[in-house]
Length: 116
Image (tube, rainbow, N blue to C red; front, side, top):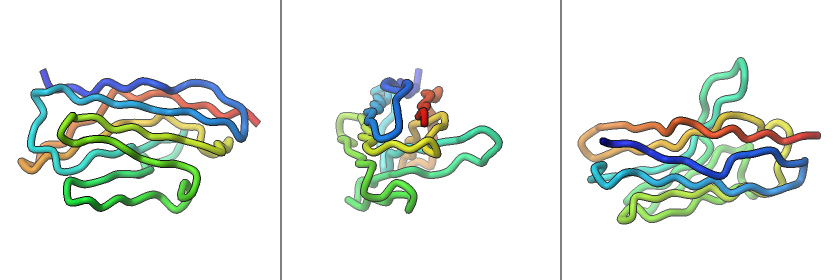
């Protein structure tokens, strides 16, 4: 069964760090992009960061310089290192995978809460 398993969310104080990890099942193949999105209460889901098999990486302006995405498409893994966290980073974070066959997969979401 194709699935994404996330870990690493939690509660942290302003200025702290968290690392999110996501592993996609091996039944998901021909991946061409992996990334993280987030959704805060009352807001739309937004892209945080993603990278592609072609080597490009993009970040939301709000996290540039604070968050770092890493991973290995060949191993079906993607991580998100989050530093200098702010209360506005509080959201449910979702792992996302897109394949060359135009399939899209989402993780179950992991809560990140930054206290002021």
